[in-house]
Image: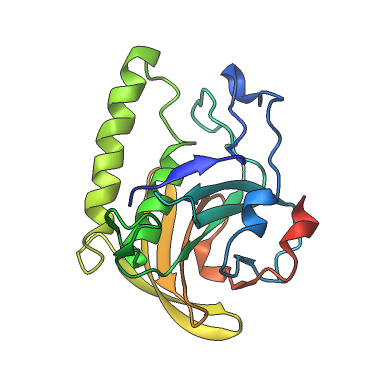
Length: 219
C-alpha cells in the first residue's frame, strides 16, 4: 500500500533508547481523516499517545496509529532487559480501488492485508536486534519488511491463527501471529475501517477496541 507519512511522524529515537525532542506529534492530520479512529477500549487505563498518519497519493489521510502504554523506542537490548509494555492500534480506511483526485490514475485499494502489513512494519521499527552492527541494520529491515508483506498477503496461511476480540463491544474475528519481536493482529470493523495492532509485553488476548470519541483530547 503506497502511502506517505506527514506532519505527525514518530519521534526518532537516539542511541540508548532516548527520544530526540523534535517535532512533537500534532493532532492535525488525525482531524482531517474522513473515518473514525480506533484505540483500546476503556478497560485500558494507561497512557495513550499519537504516533503518525499516512496519506494516499492524492493527499487524503488513509491510515494512522495510536499508542498505548510505554512509548517504545529502539534501544540496544540485552538478555532480560525490560523492553517496555505497549500496544499500538492502526486504523486503515477501507477504500476500494479508485481514481486519484487529478484523474490520472488509480489508487491502490486497502484491505485487511494492508492493516496487517502496517502493523507488522510498525512492530519492526522498534525491534531491530540491539547487537546488530549499524551497517547491517538497513539490510535487516529491508528483509524483514519484505517478510512482513509476504505474511500480510497470506492471512489464510499457517503463520496466522484466529482470535476473537471485542470491537465496540461486538466479538470480531482477527488474524493473529506472534514472533520473537512481539505480536501482530488484523481485522475489520462495522464502521468501514480495517484495524491492525501490534505490541509486546501486553497480551493481545485481553484487548478490546473502540472508536475514539474525541481524538483532539490526545493533542
